[in-house]
Length: 396
Image 1 (cartoon, rainbow, N blue to C red):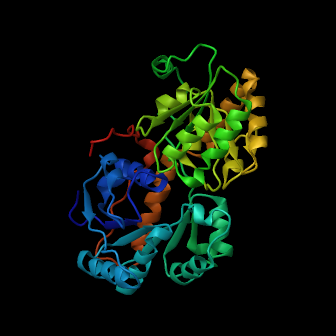
Image 2 (cartoon, rainbow, N blue to C red):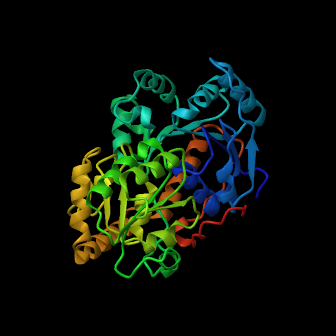
């Protein structure tokens, strides 16, 4: 790495694995050697750094927990010391950092908005909307992965159109290609006629997996199974619910994994029941794997899918969800047709190389928006490079 390579600091509320964190690891694994990269997690959790193998990373200490302006002032002090060429902040959890950047005035800011937690699943908090209106108007850009978030940024945050950048998420369609995956079914001793529904994601409140379990319990036939791949604070509650509903023998809790592709290849149908989403990467991975999907009408999910019957159900409607489960279960030809359309759509519109190149260009433009003593190096076209598979835990 050139010693004068631009220095980009990314500030998250947490750097535990999640959508924005995994996206950044993929970008850095392909192009990270072109920058000096630092990461700050406001809660001190930097677990997702283990997924980065494409670039050296500097971890900055989290600000001390305090009320009022203290965290912003501490971040401003850090920025004056390390003097990055660009800061990228992520979501409401890093809003103290946005104020710190404004106070320090050392470099341009890009702010990424990826979605909301359960406390804003139904309606946004007025105080947070007002804070974003004040703070984000000074950012070089606010980048969003969904059209819904783009509308919110323009209409509620009242940002100018030229200050909002829409970059849809992308996935490695070669890595998530369809293919045989007998190992999982053999390990779980699933019969040849077993119809396997599957969810991949964090077990959090906003994923509303209680709705999925209730819908599944209402219509499931003996040869159906439901695999839940992921970990999170709701796991114990969900396990208890399966026992209460009498489906604990049909629901398989698999915990967290780096190898989601092997699970997706074993599924017959991908399922998601979230109250709030924007552009879920897990759904894109399922589409790339050639799966039909049943999801709630949240975020851009409707626009993402191929438009097949029974794919979209209203959030919170367990009866409608159960009806879709039954309809797609009875028609193998329909499942194959929808799955093929989903994969074709993912390849055409949600390419990871295109996404990475657009983020690289955004970072370059952000750095150039301020007078610099150097010219950032030219980033090679991502489309011409082979993307590496996600590294296993422990690789750096």
